[in-house]
Image (tube, rainbow, N blue to C red):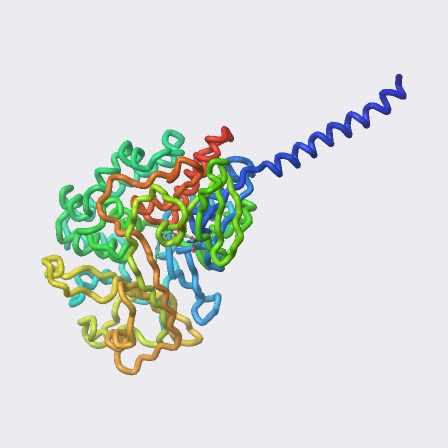
Length: 493
Ligand SMILES: Cc1cc2nc3c(=O)[nH]c(=O)nc-3n(C[C@H](O)[C@H](O)[C@H](O)COP(=O)(O)OP(=O)(O)OC[C@H]3O[C@@H](n4cnc5c(N)ncnc54)[C@H](O)[C@@H]3O)c2cc1C
């Protein structure tokens, strides 16, 4: 009997181990296959949250046509020198961007306050003027290097109670929006419905100008200050952009950035997800011929290769993807063309061009607004949306400038805004389809854009277009997919 037990125990142990191994093998082979198209904030977050919510139950492939991760979160090193990184796309996020802040903490990325990174000039002192708002002819507002309470007094003096009212409206809107992260609402099956139930649709369906003046803000404050923010953030005027988009531009308290580039958050998310990331691989189509079997074929550009997936997540503005082959229920969105031009020069901008006395330094950060007669219909406007000095490079005695503009920055324009003799040792240009036109809207694309397994994240951009909201869309769709499979869902972040 003892002999029998001695023989049987190892056999039973072996059988148990074999069963576990074969179960693990079979679950490995039967993992649901998910394709994600786009490795920006949305696609990377979706991969990360799919695996986090399901304890790594999916076999994920991320297709990215660029040869780098991050999408519109792109960092360039001036003169190819990593000491001088500049964001050419998304530059900042804020403290209440819970997904990004939590991810930066989890991945031990160094978060720095945007404002704390003071640019120091030739004399080693912080550059004197903080910012000015230019209407194409004059500065309508200037804020010097003074304390925040001095700035507040200046604002109150110039615009009465409007700054306070604007802050209260922003806080109220922000509170309504942040509920989307709570267990009560997350994940939400439909953006249109959640926007209505959180009273956000009345804000998205009016222009910033109408909503703000309707809530007691002066037209002057909305045109000068809020419009400067909507132009720099979304290249749109207050009479065009919806009020939720307008309020996003007011979220400037505690602006943060990742040292070395915000894209690192998304790179780390993809690493953590264990997804197969196929850089330089453009998806050209989704083939419906296998739909009846519950599968989707993905076509790769410049290749005959076809790959089969159970679910497909489109994580890029649809019309930019060039994806064909399948009719999807996606609402059309027009994107704003934006030129981002970086260049270096040893000179500061011309005081004369900006109507200041010779020798008076031009603000290191200039936002723009439209002159009054532009709003009346004539077409005089600043040629740029914003100009700022990003760095001073001491060993080259050069300032690094960044310009946002609706059209190409020409050498003639640079000659105009600098005094004679200015030279530009390094120039870089990036043209973006930057963000959607945020016209007033009350209906948004569904997450599910086919009654099979195709999902679309970027409908959220017509609601709010930021890295955080793309990340939230990714987390939300991940939770819907995992929830439908009865796997555990936890709330974000
Ligand atoms: C100049 C600028 C400044 C901005 N400033 C800020 C800011 O300060 N803060 C902020 O939060 N947001 C900012 N934004 C907005 C922010 O960048 C976007 O809202 C966010 O990054 C969108 O992320 P996404 O993943 O949805 O899209 P994207 O970042 O556009 O990612 C989509 C990815 O899909 C890839 N792709 C597209 N088609 C295909 C295909 N067929 N096959 C394979 N891959 C494909 C693209 O190459 C891209 O990498 C800014 C944007 C710009 C352009």
